Amino acid sequence: MPWAFTHPIPSQMNYTAYYRVSTAGQGRSGLGLAAQMTKISNFLQPSDKILAEFIEVESGKRDDRTELWKAIAHAKKHNAKILIAKLDRFSRKVSFIAGIMEQGIGLVVAEMPNATDFQLHIFAALAQEERRMISERTRNALAEAKKRGVRLGRNGARLAIQRKSEAVSRALSLRPL
Image 1 (spheres, rainbow, N blue to C red):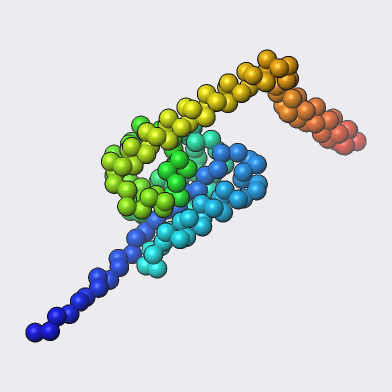
Image 2 (cartoon, rainbow, N blue to C red; image 1 turned 90 degrees about the vertical axis):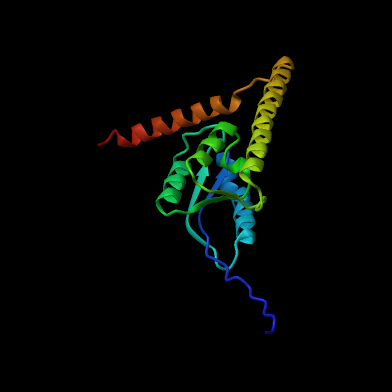
């Protein structure tokens, strides 16, 4: 009997893709989102299918992100795995990531395709610590700037003046009505 090597037929994996950037500026530039989409596109196998994509511009500190919860609900409803480019785009909180995994929702990270749940927990802990260090560095830098006499919050004051001007113009345009 001759030996025959059979190749398993790749089974289709269904994914719900989630992309996130932290700031409106990052969202407007589109570069961070494009990089995430490229990473996910390179990860996908020909038989894989993205059932839906959810894009969000929101801080990763927050767990109450609207599009994230829509993605989670979609993945549950369609028995799909959540596909993200990088773990920190999903969350930088170990407890949040663990909670999602405990619900039985599969989480796949394109840059770590072979990561086990255990490894994802470890990387989540590292992401959480990085978030803490970023926050600490930002606070320290702002404190130094303040010591040097830099007036903080100028952008907010400038926006307030601009918004007031826009409101007055709008009110004046409505006066004849």
